[in-house]
Image (cartoon, rainbow, N blue to C red; front, top):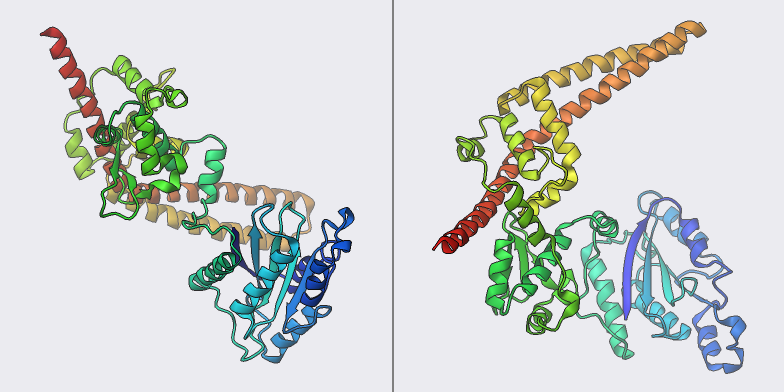
Length: 460
């Protein structure tokens, strides 16, 4: 199972070449010695478990850096991307050192062998065999630079998969995209991301369902739309306030459509999935603490017209559970507002800005941004003058006074820029947040209607 990735080298070509051909990680110098080493079983001892191989294409092994630099100087292309660093890694225990290096050399020949200089080194310093391929960004043949776009990335992956098939190795049929750093670290810290909310909703819907039809209805009540008909290649799920759908297989093996069907069938005996979920707990909290939805006069019209931004943001904070303050605030129902809980500091700062400046309409916010920009320019000129006076000042007392004035200007600029940023975010985010509020109100009204129906049945 070969996994490939590639990135540009912008800082130093000698650094990456030196790392790839590190004498502590590399021993044998060309493909002939590699094959000879593979045939010689007497050399495979416990002391040579980390022996590595190095091969070069169209450049000398001992002078790879000099040869690559010569090509760059010859075509006068010494700036920009200096080289590209490609890594080809295999599953632990799947390949031998010799086969790993052979696959790396063949990948380099098929991908770059007719135009570019390449250094291929096989390392075992991470516990698994992997190849480092250092590609000169300038072609020795015509002086053109390598275009490392998406097509090149997919071609590298396809060639690597083709080599794995030729040697009867595992190939990933559905390669999963890399999780973004923000989502990865948020999930690692236990925060609710949109993927994590989808997983929790699916888990809860499985526990409350006995067939797929019921499963889809419960998901819809929780704010998610499921599509899994035969016309779709991949079943998807999305929140009701978003147009972007997520393929189920991206959530994990337990959330593919066939696995979901299996979990629904095994529901009575699947003990590990029978746990309490925050959806049920939060709905119970909402019924006890806020039994009726507050009837603000004209709140729907307020959301549609956005004629009072301050009242709108106050109500938005109310839906988020920020106000009124209580010991255990109820979380909102809709997925979008649950994600907004992670931005409470920003939303609170925007609401305070509207209150402090008395801003109620979008026109007033626009005028505030213009005034703030003029103040920023004035303070910047003032601070620039202080810097000029500091350069010519030799008196210690006066320098101390000027530095205090400079620091005051810097603090003033910081606050003005924050206010301008928050005001601009209010203009940009208000339509989107109005849509979130509509979805949240629809879900809460659905909960109320069910509660009223149950009360009527009890009275009868």
